[in-house]
Length: 217
Image (cartoon, rainbow, N blue to C red; front, side):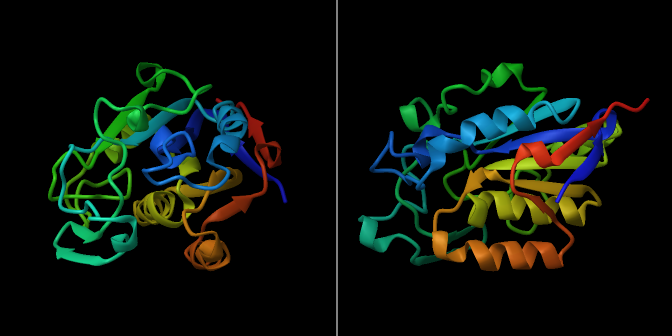
């Protein structure tokens, strides 16, 4: 399918496109095929007037750190930490760097650094807490610039991308997810995630070429 967007009222969001989610950092959270999304993220950037990026930017020790990889996904039970993860995307390490081929962070129009508090591991770009009450400022930035449509990609589909999409929908945005620009931590969940997000109103395209841009005033 194809979908048309107004360039002036569309923004592009790269959710956590970091090396810590790739095979470049095998002891962190490598997502199969993560390095393949860069060309599609680059194409996404041509679809909207503004570009936003979020990054997991974690401390060296945090409440979600798994003792071993076998402990990953075990429940933690804190208000803003749901489950354990391998240590990943720590500030100052390779894992926190953006994927090669993407713009430097400061060339994006807006950035969100999340998970800097060791007792909070948010997934979405819009809020720093699990209850969606502590804003990151991304929504306010988009509203100020009269953005109504978002093109979303990044890592990973079943966690941070999914949460960012749900938050955006709840905030009233039209959301388009380019499937070629995202991958899942747990590939077996992809179909269920897509079904759930479609039911909430998300538009999916197979690649960026299916997003047709109209440069209206």
